[in-house]
Length: 293
Image 1 (cartoon, rainbow, N blue to C red):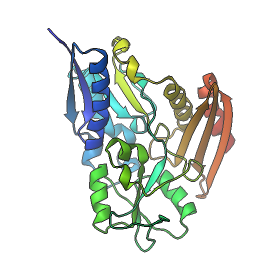
Image 2: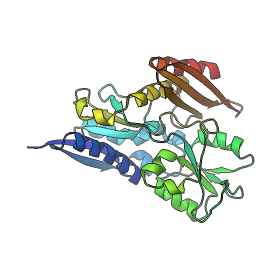
Image 3: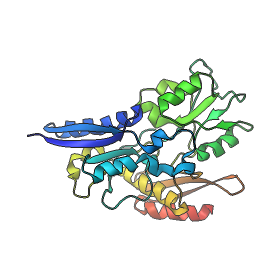
Image 4: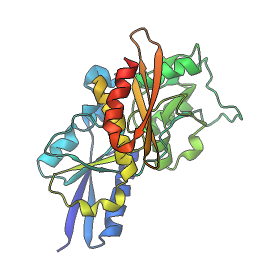
């Protein structure tokens, strides 16, 4: 009898595409293993009319997946790391992290617009649900209006192309994983727009006793150090995905450079940077949080 591994995932096109990456990795490594996706709609996917910080934060995207693990209906869950709360249940730790896809935020213009110098039509609002992005957009495009947009990537693009928005800001990684690289009008540099902690990295959650050797080909050591540094910074602020903070760690050999931003009570964006040995990743996050506030 074949061994069966059940992977819990949100049911959006992006979440399923990301879960398929894990599924294919396991099957390539252990062809005798049957891997199935268990798709579910989370509370965060259903409540689309308000900002996440007003209705419970990023935990709304994982509640149902955690419940499925707890009840034994799934063996693993896979998440976009930026959507995962900083506090993880002891019973279901993060087992590892994927190789990072492009970490940057992307400006996306309506499909009908083609321009050599992509910039939003400031007569229309820029769509985002992130206070972090909104604060940095105000610096990049003075006078712009930011309007809430929720929903999956494809539904957001439909709203953009219908004329409701002049532009969107989305994670480049999601567009690339959906085969939508042609929709990227401009990649913001890390200094222009510091991304969300963990953006572009996938996290795999499961029971402590799960056989991690099945997952080894999917995991990336540098992504682990990046995740530790970036999430340590967010944790030091007590911040969730809707807190106006961002962090990105780059690695060159044994050195890790952590770049972070936070929005002050007065609304100004503050940035700082720190370089350490990569095994000091968590300490770097804590120190950088202290440097900013």
